[in-house]
Length: 214
Image (cartoon, rainbow, N blue to C red; front, side, top):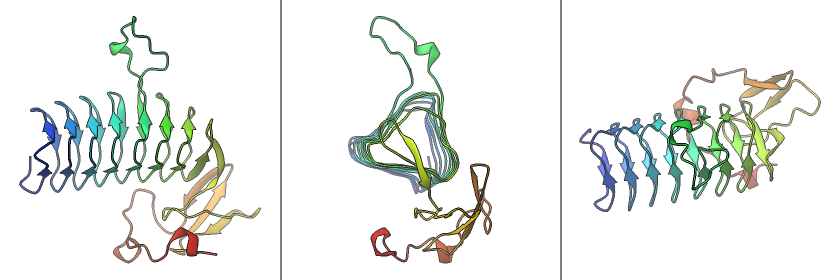
């Protein structure tokens, strides 16, 4: 564990886990043995990371989130307060299925809103945006906006978290960053920046709130 890692005195960090440099673990959290956490992550109050969970760099986990075995978060994922991940589709107290935990994969840059529920066995695409309180039961494509119960595709979001309005066109521009995006057969990609690249420094600082955009 790096000297730049911060562990609050009330947190429990079991021997055998891996925590990257610059990561912060806050009040009353529990990181289990064999969990793997990357660099520059932040875990809010009362978070839990089970053995076998894999977490990339710069991941932000807000208060009261539990990550159970089978969850894999790539770099730059944001998890809102009290969002929920499951790892068995049909749990029963009387039937042990510890050897049958299902995988959930949240890809780079995706956002899971507060109180959303992610049912196990799905993949959340890169830079997808799951709205607060949504229930996700199916795979989510890159840049998709998912709202409701059950969660449905309601549009597309830019890397900066703004609606992309294709208006019947195959091209759209993020109103904040001015990065352009294209859509083809239901798949969205950024034209100006690879999905695997970090944002340039001049685009990594927000310039306006969502409500202040036209």
